[in-house]
Length: 504
Image (tube, rainbow, N blue to C red; front, top):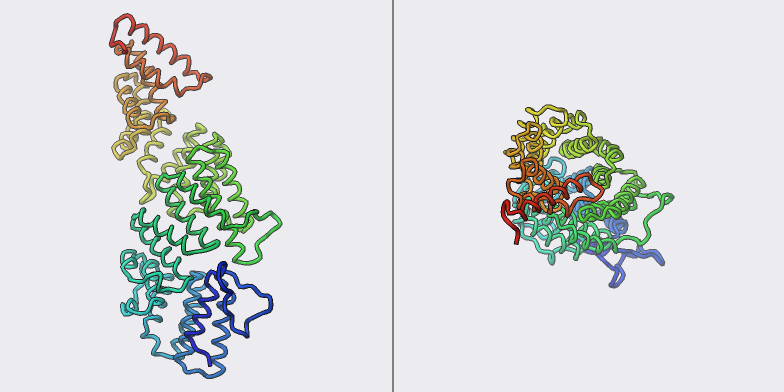
């Protein structure tokens, strides 16, 4: 006689990690000589449940038991997410028809809540709070439902421990909780939870959790930490990458390809943020290749591909990838691609095309980099010779917090008006605010030294210091190099003659 709980235990065994333990106990009717059942063997798990349902129906098992088997099946289907929503809906309907009383059970309510949230997101209505007080499996699905409904704090408030859950749900619980903490901007808590999820997971699932952790490190500007985590994740994939003639034959193989593509995508960003441009290019090329092999190119890979090319000074080639990113972007992603396109056009000295893209980005509600876009629009206006418009837009950008790029434009405008004192003030603000050694900081140091020279070296010590700082980061082949040397020598001469303060 089929027992639902025993069947569920067999399902959990099939989904557990058996790489370092005894082989999974498969029912005799499914056992095949020489067959191996690796970690999270969903094929075996579904076969166990479907065979049990068929046998229970044939034996005319009591309706509540047959309904319970179908609830377990819906739980399993829910792990496939949106791809199995219709199947899960049908399975739950079957269970309710067999035994209408299951509609009041915590397990059924939790599964219905998760399905509702998956279909309707924040508009979902949780059917009954009694599900929170159900067993651990029910409470796991409550967490999933609340997270999908974007009720993150409530999801974190559901009490369920990993020890209560079967092995295949433990890392998934921590993953849901990490996602909730991340959505609430509790980044450190999310990092710890992704790390624990990785510890509880195995194979490609462990790689996925490590990659989520690495992505958070990248958001925090911790490129070296991200790279270290990614190196651990790479060990969970096959050593040799798939070749062009190894097309994926099913959804699982395609998922593996996309997981490895995501690894290269993240590693490219880690390398880019550490100025390892050759490595960044190599990784984003591989990410692009793997996505195309899986038949699923993405907005993110196209965008980063363009960013890497821009960092290498290959803006013309980057345009193709930014255009591709724009075509694939979701509405919330479009301003990022438009902004990148606008800056690339500025770098190519095509201000009309730049302004068009930048104005589209600035007009997108909730885009977090509007001040920077305004500063870039001001730069485009300046290059078009529209000085009043450039000045007004740059002042607006400065007021909204884009201090460095806006000040550079304002300095350029004041130079065109030959307002040297005002221009110097803007460039000195950049020197104070920009990171030493960056392009903007070097430009400001060069301009500050040059303006002081045009003013007749009223403070030769300051002129000397700015010229010296700029020279340290200026290539000898640059036209600025000779100019700065002249300023340095002139300032030194004036300091030696007693005009101005003398350096110690």
